[in-house]
Every structure is written in C-alpha cells, then in structure tokens.
Length: 180
Image (cartoon, rainbow, N blue to C red; front, top):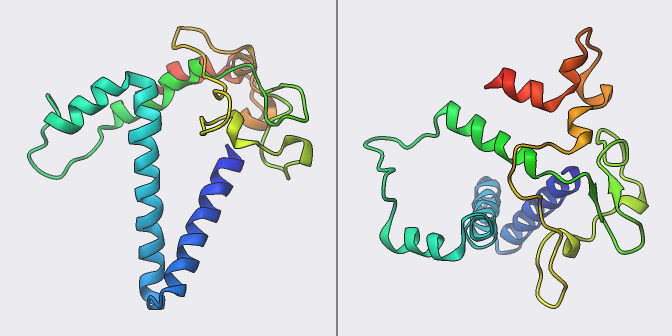
C-alpha cells in the first residue's frame, strides 16, 4: 500500500512538472496536478476496479442510464455508515501471501509487508503482478468475498495494534465489529 501511495505521489508531481512546463502559473500548478491525478484515479475506478467488482455490463448500464436509486437532492455525500462498511468489506478479500516481483517468492502480509520502514529492494513491487496490463499475464486476484479473514489479519502484529491488555484487540475481525 505504501508503494501505491508513493506511485500516486510521484504521478501527482509529474503532473505538476508538466503544468509548469506548459507555463501554468505557480498558483495553478497544484490545482492542475490535483485535477489530473483525480481524473486518472477516477478512470482507474471506472474502467478497472468497478468492472472487476460488479461486471462491465452493470458499469456500462449506470454510465448510460444514470443511477437507479441514488439521486441526491442537494450536495452529494457519503454517509459514514456506508463509507465504513465499504472500506471494511474488502478486508475479507486480502490474501495471506502476495507475489511482489518476479525475483522473489510470494511473501506473507506480516512481517514481510509490514509498513513503517524503508522498502528493501527484494520487496519492490512489479505492478504487472498486481494490476492487469496489456502484454502481461493476468494479475493476482483478491480473494473472493466471504466471511473469512486471512490468518495474519486475525493475529495482527503489535506494530499495527499497539500494546493492548485485551488479546482480542489484535484481531481485525474484532476491530471491524467494534467499529460497526
């Protein structure tokens, strides 16, 4: 996840450099870069993420016909309950191990992919293994949605949870239920 954030930061900075190169005022550089990054992110959601989640026919239907049930009267917003559920449903899709590049074997989430430290060269991501790209084999898929979390998420490391007197707080499942 940290490497994806870094990739997005680098893309934003590249858009800022392009805006400067086109002669945009320094005041407009950030807004231009943010807009370009947002458009790329929205394109990826619309053309990559949503079709893999709900299928291309449904995405095409919503684009052509508009939303069937969601029609806000005023400013659109995402209710906290929905946002929280939307973020948490994906926890069951997290795999136990990931192939990060072609030089190393698949590695477990923890401790190998624990953040908060520099990324060693052996853990550098080859994005073609995580995202479908033309000319490459299909990328690794998330687990199908079910009611099970990968074992590393049931036993989260202290580096993530912090010290706690209650052992159950080291489980993402418990944390999800508490948050709900």
